[in-house]
Amino acid sequence: MPRTRFVSLGIHVPDRVVTNHDLTKWMETSDEWIQQRTGIKERHWVEGNVGASDLAFEAAKKALAKAGWEAKDVEAIVYATLSPDHNFPGDACFLQAKLGVPGIAALDIRNQCSGFIYGLSVADAWIRSGQFKRVMLVGAEVHSTGLDISTRGRDVSVIFGDGAGVALLEATEEEGMGVLSTHLHADGRYAKDLWTEAPASCMNPRLTHQMLEEGRQYPKMDGQKVFKNAIVRMPEVVREALTKNNLTTRDLKVLIPHQANLRITEMVQRSLELTDEQVFNNIQKYGNTTAASIPICLAEAIEARNVQRGDLVALAAFGAGFTWASALIRW
Ligand code: COA
Image (cartoon, rainbow, N blue to C red; front, side, top):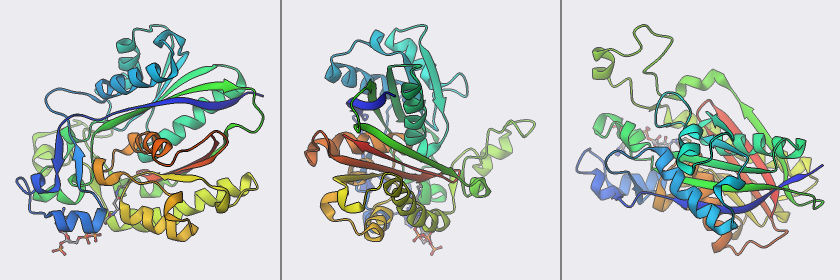
């Protein structure tokens, strides 16, 4: 049975850097509060009318160039986002049009911070089954146009950044290489603890002036509940992946945790008893870019930690839904 290997990664963030200090112009907050609670120093936010698919397109071009592929070499796009350009159709279709490859499969994944790993699981299943040999896996978000950038929304809006990461995946016949396994979980009882309520098709009308005034179109979060669940679920799902493959934390070259919050990933590291060298974080520069955070972090970690062929890489995520997931890759 073929396995899935990562051929290349491409990342893209908007040019505009928004520092914690910049945020103090719009809300009561401070660089000290944000850094202490989240580790974030700055994030990139789009200017003007730029959608997630525009960021994804830039990242995709970089990934294609690195792989030496043309867009027509891709047989399917799997695209994870919670901030698609429009309500429908999915962003994979918009990206496909930008890449100029009509006809190929285009699938959107709506699993928030776990979206990239859920997407990897789908792409891996397609490749293992022989349905497709070359898949483009995307994580892309534009949060900034949908945040409550005022004191009312400060607990959420200081966390999120815009960005995109693209991985090109290909079938390999090499035994023991590539994606070893993926592990997916969710608990919908917590769906309303991190969500955007409106516009809502379960409400008629979907959006009213009153709802807009009340700020129900903005993401809301029970930060402490998210925190408490994340620090349990992320180590748990990494252990699940290692156990499934008869491996231990000592075998790991690097863990790429979803960049939710530096305090969360520090606690995950402690819980798994990993060294600083075994965990890579870059939330300081990008904030939480949700579905894009793992590919952005992975791309930088491969360079910074000099990941070589055969090294063991783990991905782990936790986020809205609640959803959580992990993947083990023999690079
Ligand atoms: N700047 C300054 N003060 C802020 C603030 C901000 N950006 N956001 C909230 N506060 C205030 C609150 O209003 C509160 O004030 P009060 O005590 O006067 O009521 C105080 O800070 C503490 O708020 P609290 O929500 O208890 O803080 P916290 O220690 O739980 O930290 C988070 C808040 C959001 C940083 C934290 O809960 C967290 O990181 N949760 C996980 C979130 C996450 O990772 N989400 C992404 C999931 S993928």
